[in-house]
Length: 523
Image (cartoon, rainbow, N blue to C red):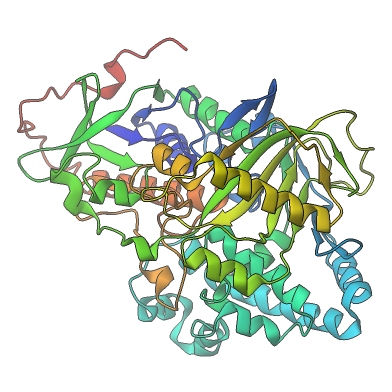
């Protein structure tokens, strides 16, 4: 039985563990935190449990496939339903627009909001983004990473150059949106999708417009949030024999005399040997020596200027009034360009766009009345990824909270003056995810070449692989899971190619005992 060690229980690591354990491999997953989920953790505020990470669940088919490979069904592990309202958008008081799971209803809503020309533009936008998605889904998002456009064009088909050009890789997303939407509010709405992978719509390629189609294909609600999905993946992997070592930190990726990864060392000094190692951490943590100097050559370091966005995230338990919240809500700033210019200069936005997830609200058309008393909110504002160079003092955090509340109030949403809350800053994310500066999405998708520069599953060191939202194909819950599946497939391929050879003693003096024989702490 081949032994695989996975570092990190984020979505990528969990997807790898589920697939490899289903294929009969001896999987040991080591996670420094007490619970699985990575960024999809939970925090306690005022006695309430609040989602700490991603809240939007799309591309359900990715997870259906993971569970089906283990002979299970996703709905046997979590309660999932399709949202009828994708999101509610607001600019100023009384300026609101809902997008729906029903595309015709979305077109009608846009027409009522911005006129018949905008509705026609949305119809063209729908067709164009669907085309982009269909072109890139298999060859890029679910396939191996490529280092330049030519291999991608080869996968798409050399005779389909028109399709390749239709992705508009050399045009900024913001400029491309003007071709569909003369109304600046709609440019702002659909430009925000670039932030799903931590990028500015003014610098990201127009190709990222396909994210709008991903969401239009369906947004799903999970009882218990994305963390419940992470727990379900753990249960699935454990059911196939995977071992989870929670609350233990890997301090070193070990290498043998042949220059191959051969296991990990924990902070306790314990060594877990393995035939392959998958690292579900930001690749820059490897490059900067967080797992030892020897493996640091496995990947290229990421310059701070290439980092994606970070975020200020409020976890609040508060009374609300004045705005009819649904589950997903966006409150737009008055000047989007200034907002991203301020972030690029290293400052939090003075008038921020805010995403509000109202965890206790339904996204159905027949939503129940507002919760009585306080409700749980997760509120996200984009911020610069400088958490390794700048720490927010109380004066700074109070100023950010005032700016947030001022924006919400302009759109009609009132929160308690002294609402119970916790605030996570870029410095918080740097502590949790070292070597990132707080960047939550890895490399920013700025410029036409950005998609080709993300770290792929294989590294420069044999038997060491990368997974997670900072690797290919991109950030986000389904993309991180796809990265884990890609890493697992590379492990399978590489191990299969060596099975006909005799096993040699592992240089370096460590035991070759199976990782499954290591003790597992009680939970």
